[in-house]
Image 1: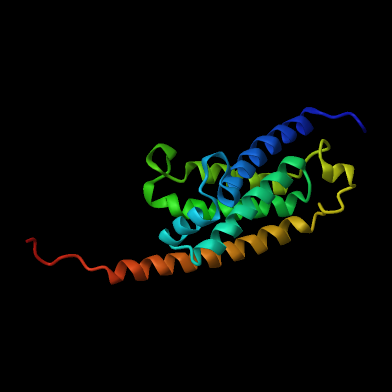
Image 2: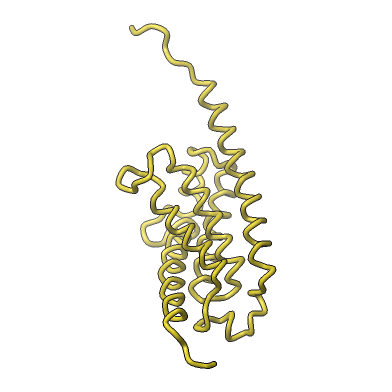
Amino acid sequence: MTAFDRRDLGLLLLRLGTGGVLAAHGTQKLFGWFGGHGIEGTGAFMESVGYTPGRASATASGLAETGGGTLLALGLATPVAGAAAAGAMAGAAAVHTPNGFFNANGGYEHPATLGLAAAALAIAGPGRLSLDHAFRHVVDRGWMVPSALAFTAATTALVIGARTRRMRRQKQGEQEALFEE
């Protein structure tokens, strides 16, 4: 069967949209493009929200978003690309969670949506309008899906857990005034 169906077109559109947004967001971190702050500014922000060391965290996040997003858009190494992007978005969602769900209030709506779309693409696959299909799925094997998602989930849990512990210790070190002056 060589004809493309609407599933292939739908996956292509989802990959291009999700991957494009992720790649653009990642280049803000890595290169300061599109009004971003680059590695230095993003690193300082990462430190301020508990991801340390900040520069390494900014680099890892930027690479996961830029690389994962670009690969998703191309439909290449889709399980790894989707898992990496989903992991980065889980880290972002952890920062925004105290603000509730909706993006208008600074919530986790946007990173959650991107992360779920990236994970769904990792599971569903890229469709026939992709480089994975053109290269006969050399880097898109069935066993790669659970492996990539499990590795990313474990790594993300460790990183977010370390951040949570850091933030908790920092909060415990702050003491409120006993009396108003």
